[in-house]
Image (cartoon, rainbow, N blue to C red):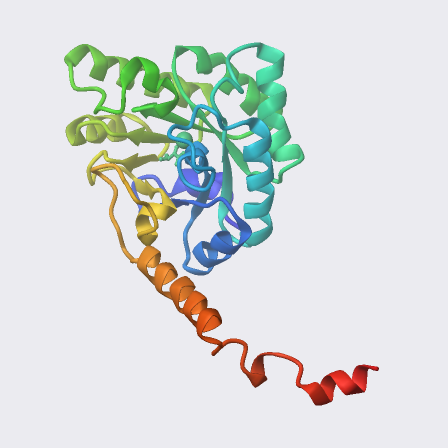
Length: 269
Ligand code: KIV
Ligand code: NA
């Protein structure tokens, strides 16, 4: 069982591998492949749920997906990604929404898209026993304001990210995701912190990397410029489903070996 302490201690030594997962089947595969951390990302909105952003994803969506991933992940750390407006509206509700991911959905930690408004919340959650992964740089829940472009490209923005990174480390976050920021900024943040940084579109100097599993498997129809593909599952699925359709239409399926023969049916009555 990977713990948040294990992940924290990997900073500066072993590269941390993190991948999103939204269901038990994928979680089992990623777990068997030795992935350290499974993130039940609100990117499930873009992938399985078919929305064109993460904004409509609910805490119920994440709780149900997290419970499934936790059932499939024997060794990997399971992190529930808190969706848009599930934190920040109201202090008590924020704590309860995060807490339920651990209490009801068996998450090991939550991830918060971080900002000035999550420093105190992070401290409170850690105090209560809910481990927190922070997330700075591109935070897609703010896309209406920021778009999906690279963040931290001006001196002021870079300073703000570094400052918020330090504040979240001080508040007790056990790791920090850095999304779509210049590689030299990510390297600087990684140097400045003792907790691990986990990059996506943030260069090679972070303590770990994370990608969306649909991008890795080659299931996505569109993926961000920094995503990498390690498989071509979409075309394999297309072939398998097309072969099935053709076999039904041609009468090749079902064949005798696929079902009851007339003799077996006679035995039932
Ligand atoms: O939701 C998600 O998949 C994420 C990762 C890209 C970090 O937040
Ligand atoms: Na996310």
